[in-house]
Amino acid sequence: MPIEKYHQQVAECTAILRGRLSLTPSWGIILGTGLGRLVEHLQGGDSLGYEQFPHFPPPTSPSHVGRFVWGHLAGVPVILCQGRFHLYEGYTPRQVALPVRVMAAVGVRNLVVTNAAGGLNPLFQAGDLMLITDHINLQGDNPLVGRNVEGWGPRFPDMSRVYDLELRKLAEEVARERRLRLRQGVYVAVKGPCLETPAETRMLRLLGADAVGMSTVPEVIAGVHAGLKVLGCSVISNVNLPDAMAPIELSEIIATVRQAEPQVVELLLGILERQAQAG
Image (cartoon, rainbow, N blue to C red; front, side, top):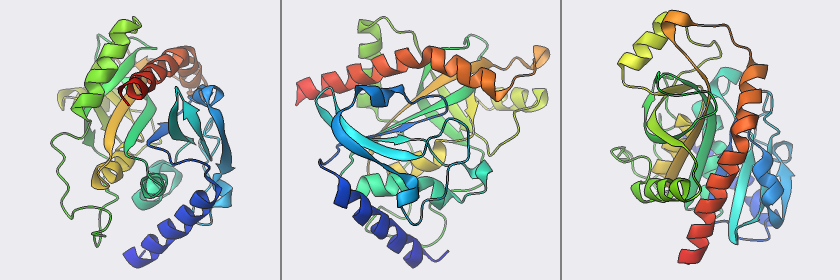
């Protein structure tokens, strides 16, 4: 798709969302697989389904509702993506990053990405939260491929500190205060939809990854390109031990994530409360 057409699509979707928003969100939060209860804590605001946007593809992955929801969390104006798009659904990186482009255009300056991920670090346990410190892109594509839109960001964005150090420090402080076990590690993104083989699991661990998933990285790249401060959190849905791999189904992954979801909600609310106090 020519970049001019994509730019126009972003503009049209932005106009639709801006026409419905009753606030200017400073934070955008993308809710991953099995994560949706944060919306229950929103005060005020409204929602708009992705089907209302002419260029948004339909989300097909289970538990991804497919809508923007906005309001205040802990007094902070936010907009949530209840569901995301994935490359394995047949969508392009630009389509996957479309909600981030739109959120940046309506005023979001801080982006939180959440996901369910398979643990590669043998010290991790199912249900752990992992603060993403860095990532490895093995999806074979990038939302910035093609001509650059200078108004969105630089041609060659620096990726030396993708996940904002101040936000990570804040997350660590909140986790300590609330006695939440918060692991830290590197997230590797693969295209999917197949889960990893034992040999692939060994390879990914040797590359330095602590968790593996099929999302997040295209959105984060677009966010960094747009100048957003990014914070990432994975819920470890299972731990991949290559010498003792056990079959797992998506229903088990979602069940584990939902058990850990209250911790995710507490962590994010704590971060936003601290942000509100800081003004």
